[in-house]
Structure formats: structure tokens, C-alpha cells
Amino acid sequence: MAKKVHVTTTVNGDDYEYLAEPGQTLVDVLRNNLELTGTKEGCSTGDCGACSVILDGELVCSCLVLAAETDGKSVETIEGMADGDNLHPLQRNFLDLNGLQCGICTPGFLIAAKALLERNPDPTETEARFWLAGNLCRCTGYDKIVRSVMAAAEEMRGA
Image (cartoon, rainbow, N blue to C red):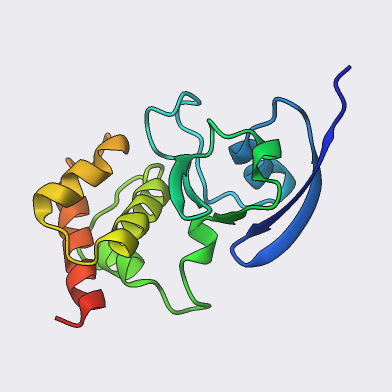
């Protein structure tokens, strides 16, 4: 039997310690150990983007990251986007412009869009569509998602 690994990580600014099974993924730890259920597991193969998180500043699919790999690192999830009751501009624009329907893909899109706007606060629509191409949605047709991201980018720039 493989030994569990002691992991210390920061999630949304809070420090956590836990024991991880050798093959346990980050999405499993977030949802089952830390009870942060906003991150969704869609495909378990890194193809849908529903489990997207930001790991040390990089957008990753948390279903492809072993929990043990997060030792000493920082993780940002959907639960960390809002500031208390104040929604992040991306969250607000997704609501205002109907950039979501069933909600399974929404946390992943929001985290991916946040990562995009942190790197490029003034993306073109083509750049936004390219950046979000790793996230799949069966409900919206993507247009409202992209409009929401573009509106949030404009708001965040103060335009």
C-alpha cells in the first residue's frame, strides 16, 4: 500500500494541510477534502475545462494535477473570485449578460477568463475565444460567454 503524502498548500489565500493519496487529483481534494465544491469535474481527462483552477499563476485542469504536486503552491478557485458579497466583474457580467445556463462549465470559464484578463487586460474577441477554447459548454453557444468576458475586461480597464 502506497503511503499518503503530507501536503501544505494555499487555496484562495487560506493555508491548508492534508494527507493525499499518491494518485489523488487536485479536483478530488478541493471537492472532497476541502469541501470547495465550486470546481466541477466534467471529463477527468483535461478536455472540458470545468475543473480549471489557477495554480501558481498558471491556468490548469485540476483533474490532471496530482494533489501532491500542489505542496508549497498557491491555488485559486471559483470560491476565491468574489470579495465577500461583492462579485468579481466577470461574475457580475456573466449574470447580467446571461453567460451561463446550467452552471456546470461556468466556474471553469470564470477562472479561465480571470487568468486571461490577468495576462491581457485588453484582449480582442479572437484572443478571448482562443483563450477560452479549452472550456466546453453544451448550453450557451459561447457567444454570451465571450460577450460577458469582453464586457468585464472593459469594465476592469475602466473604459
